[in-house]
Length: 232
Ligand SMILES: CC(C)(COP(=O)(O)OP(=O)(O)OC[C@H]1O[C@@H](n2cnc3c(N)ncnc32)[C@H](O)[C@@H]1OP(=O)(O)O)[C@@H](O)C(=O)NCCC(=O)NCCS
Image 1 (cartoon, protein in one colour):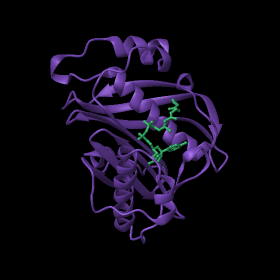
Image 2 (spheres, rainbow, N blue to C red; image 1 turned 180 degrees about the vertical axis):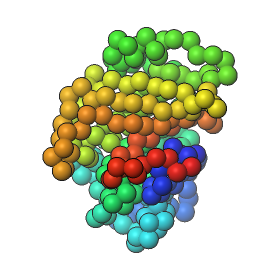
Image 3 (tube, helix red, strand yellow; image 1 turned 60 degrees about the vertical axis):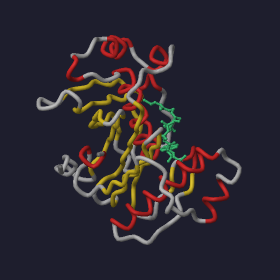
Image 4 (cartoon, rainbow, N blue to C red; image 1 turned 90 degrees about the vertical axis):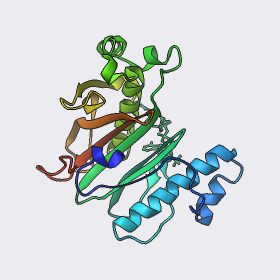
């Protein structure tokens, strides 16, 4: 399902339940040796997805270890992002000649816990999230906002290398004309930073969808002007 949010060049793999065939590299297994079973399973399944995405790019299977601030470390020349939530695990990878950064997030399509929306939302976002949604497009806007902000962070941090708080990005959403349960979003970064080439990073364009009880968001930053439009 996430591949419909991505441009050509990106390789997505996802799982809607545990993948008993996924195997960890020893360095990965050491990281979750004492973790609860649920964490071990999501960690293992999502790395199984990562290995399949590497194969899709023609790469040999490599461990995915956390770097600074837990950023996943990808093979040279590859950018990527991972997410897991109840009933869903996904990975997106791309050659850095196609994308300079990617960030994905998945959440259950359920209301946020009390108090979380006030913590993560700017005033305009709060108004939007609390506006009732027509029945055909029913989804938890507060959760969509949260997911998109997580995708922003997962795109931002590997690219810029500095922290980004929830109030540092202002999000706005559009719904596709042909479906009330998918669309686009724009994230304006209010505390811009610089990318690896020294150019300012001021915001991102993303896509979202709500399906199968999940909300999924994705941001893909094209490596060249003209690239990066969704291929499907
Ligand atoms: C790191 C964070 C974004 C993870 O999101 P989450 O919804 O809790 O969890 P998900 O399952 O979707 O994603 C987890 C994966 O994110 C990735 N991740 C962790 N830290 C990361 C970072 N600094 N940069 C990019 N990706 C990161 C990892 O691959 C991790 O999977 P793993 O633990 O199996 O290796 C979140 O916990 C967090 O710290 N958020 C606060 C910062 C933020 O969102 N600011 C808002 C800016 S507008």
